[in-house]
Image (tube, rainbow, N blue to C red; front, side, top):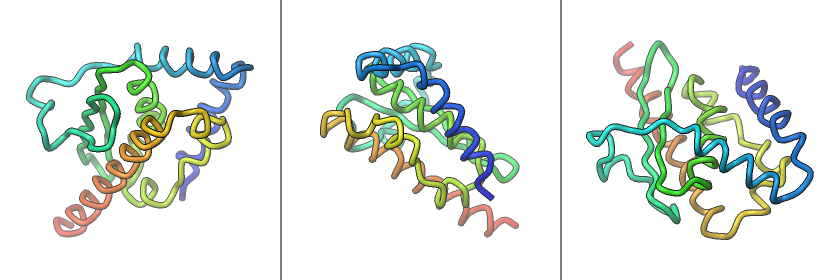
Amino acid sequence: MFESCLDKQRLIKELFSTCSSEEARYQKIIELGRQQSSLSELEKIPANLVKGCQSQMYLCSQYESGHVLFRTEADALISAGLAALLVQVYSGESPETILKCPPSYLDELGISASLTPSRANGLYSLHLRMKQDALKWLMEGHKSA
């Protein structure tokens, strides 16, 4: 059931396999942040703001054909890159997969352990919000079915 989620986690682990130091990991995360697309001004509303992040982080989700699509924007490159790590794995997955497939790759890569407490809290808050959105889409999806 989680095969695509686990495959995406493996791809990210491969992406970071060349990073031999914490500094190299941070550079890779910042690089991912630079690649992030922007949200529209209409999407940057208080309802889309992720609480608990050190920087301003917005999360938008939509439900299409049984899958949740996520997009984020952050005002700090490191935050944007951390968000990209979650979006690349969970966007396009079913609500059930988002709720049940843990982001173990973050611990395996040593990313969670190397973050400051406030950044780690922001990453946790973003993942929690993604799960909350998935649950909302799951409930609404079953109502309309």
